[in-house]
Image 1 (tube, rainbow, N blue to C red):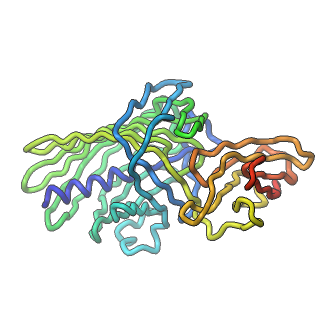
Image 2: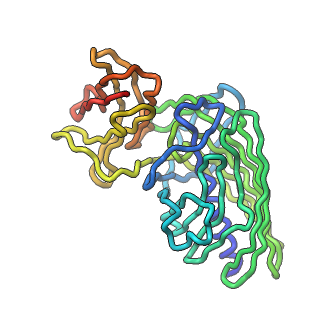
Image 3: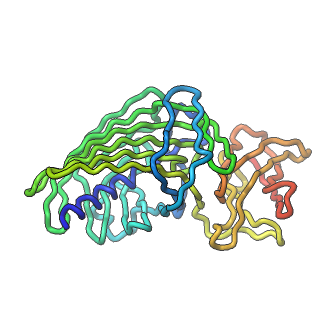
Length: 345
């Protein structure tokens, strides 16, 4: 029973580390602090470990044929108010992992991607010395190293936890996902972690090697790889798997309805930097965004956006555009095509 609790606690730490992002304006070589709003959620599909490809510059990574039979959802919420906010005064966000009934307290910037502890089955496990995974900005070729520690109480068993993390931006290029989606400006981050849990009955060691790919302003990675070794006095367990992003939903209160055509929300409007376009989630009868076209008031094509397959949110940057009115069309040429006006200031 004690071993099971320790393993679950470790996996809650692991689940946190699947999150990061890159700025929409940043190129693939550099990660910066993420941009998101309260209530954003996403689902990750899980499959057996597949080839993660090679690191390097201007690489091409292909996941177009990967099938993910299972998955789970993560929701991002403010750390305050929350039942255990006093245990994590430095945290600014919570990751709610629905399938595992876990809450992970984190900082998503502005300076670091940082893990402060979590709650599992109603028990809080704050770290004394938080785990900083990497700084912002984090550029191709750079390496970051940090340690962490804490004294945890798992089902009455005192655990002295310590660990070290080493992260490197080791590649950038383009990536293909199922559905014929090709993404440019993709960043690859490689991470090695060693965590030791010491108790009166012995020592468990966790060795975790992960590779993740990020793109755009989404809070979740496009693809995550994990190779995990759980080393105990009696045996060693090896776990390998891969995760692919399946859906990302922006945390807005409602979607504007427009006749019988495809419903979509667009905000902020007026805009000066990034604009988000979102349709209702599929469980509420929503439709996917296949393509978005933006034209100026004279009808000239300004931008074409191809969302990730199956996702109901897309983001584009207008910071370099001339001020004025633009027509944004979702799924142009299709029966459910819909157009709204966007004011760029």
